[in-house]
Image (cartoon, rainbow, N blue to C red; front, side):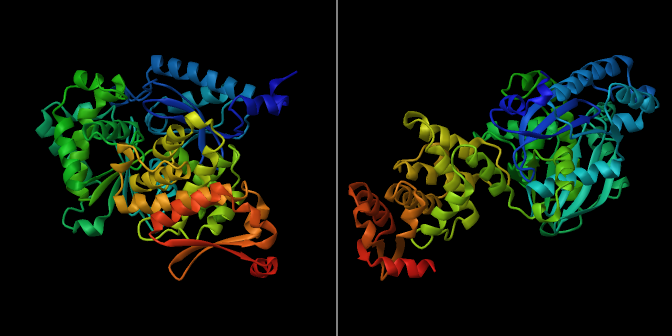
Length: 514
């Protein structure tokens, strides 16, 4: 029997996640296949494989794709095509960027792609820039500033603000071309890059930083730069997505990397030899961008062209979804914590432990979903694994403080109030205290009636006259057991108030429901 006719086998290959779409991205440096599942508003990467073909390595000198690079790329692409066929994934989008569009033999290469069953689309520089910008908008809905997508063959610059992108440009400043600017030394390289940026119309140096917004950096070399900066700062998080530097710190990073040797960078964890080779030149380019664009901060984004392709295909109502809740919702549902249960518990605990000064209701709901999902893990593994979910999974739409607050809520849900140092390094004590109250309220909610729907119908948790009050229907008075009493004491203690239980006629709580 064909594997393509057995969806259960296909689903099982990705641990219960259904592969929905695949994108083949044929760039100047790498050829990559990414398979996505989960919510397409916050897609989960199920398979990510690349071939470093360096298709664009000879374009600057010969104007052509090198024969060896074509052979290496086609070998990888034939494998990708076969994988997709065997997995039964038919929603596949293949895009080719700078190397294919700039090379004299690009059309010939595209025909070879068609011959192996792919349907490639060679996109223009402007389209590439806009797609990358849409990926950034998808990850940072409030993004305002300039997106700089650095590939092997080109650098795309595009403005973003108010959920839209415009003023897109393509500059021949990809990582494979940067060495050509280096011949006169770093000083001459800086001047040449600065000239190229100004010539393309990107000179915002005279505008106040507050007007320019952020510089969003997209591309693997930029991400390697973020990994370097995070390690230098002993940063508590591991994912470079969303990592920020103020303008002064970004200039310090430029100075450190521009003067570094590639061999020394290769010794660093999580920086590949290929990226290490390109980092010093990329740092000089970043320095030129900082000078001309004058941003108030730099933000590293793991979302770019591929995620822009996904975002563009979403219906309008899906684009307005919160990416954090979309991603956490699917993740938690697959681990026994449906969104409906989380919303029910978040509503039940709202009066006693709302999001106040430091968090938000969207963050509290996300923390609730993750905390409930953690209860499906064996007790001896639960807290460290769930805290790692909060801190290190690639959630979109949440920063370091938000991650720390989710971790604090998860820990308090497990009655662990002594937080690890890596959590405390990311948020203030006040923010962590607020999140701990979320977790303790959730602990009470789920333990009161074993998370049954009925338990929420016959009870209410409120703060009245400065006291924490649990109201229970007469029919369910026995739910107030020893565990519930302990949970009430814990939560009231963190709230700094007295507590009591009120037994009320069933009709009182039923009237509240109606």
